[in-house]
Length: 310
Image (tube, rainbow, N blue to C red):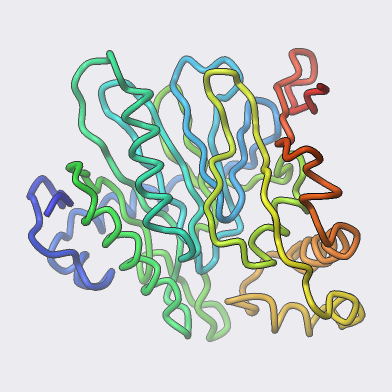
């Protein structure tokens, strides 16, 4: 009983997006405001990009990160948790795996980063998902809302641009209107965005969810300013050679939850990831030697993430 909708503590979690918008029309208005903001294309400098099944948290005075962002969310939902007093903020890209644990980690990180700052509320913003044919997004919306509702801390839902409000129809096909957002960590402003540069170790990070590693990884240490990938292990993917021999259309149809609306680079990214898995069947041995994470720090000259050698 700790989800706050439109300023009112809720006894029950809304079962779906339609019920939410019907009972609390204010969320239609805030979603419309977000949809009215033109999409920004964000470069790598000052960006901390969060992949599917990842989360990251930081504070306004972080000199390494200006923007937290994620995109390519079709049936996925991007979740932002922010403390209004300190500006501490966390962002996750969730697909239904590891939701409870991710929600607990996000709230915990934001509370830790907000220690010693003025009082404030924990605010929740949800963006992404659409009216897809299989209702994946609706299921995920309920899954996420329920996880926050079960959490002992009071959480204010301030934005929900999800489901039908994030759906348009093109050529008879439902499409998501916003697939990516950025958060300005200094101001807390959220805006529609795409990110051509998705940061280091992209194939490795995609391999994690393609092979079924359920955990949502926390990828950033804001105290050190380090982007941290791993360590994690995955099982060798059976038939990876066979997958790589298939046509682009076959890969699209079988490895996407929403093949009609994936971005143009989807198949290329999946192929690169499959090749990575083929070359690194046992990442505990070939990728994370001695069980060490991959660390990256912001290069002062180029502004991009560079490997930390140790």
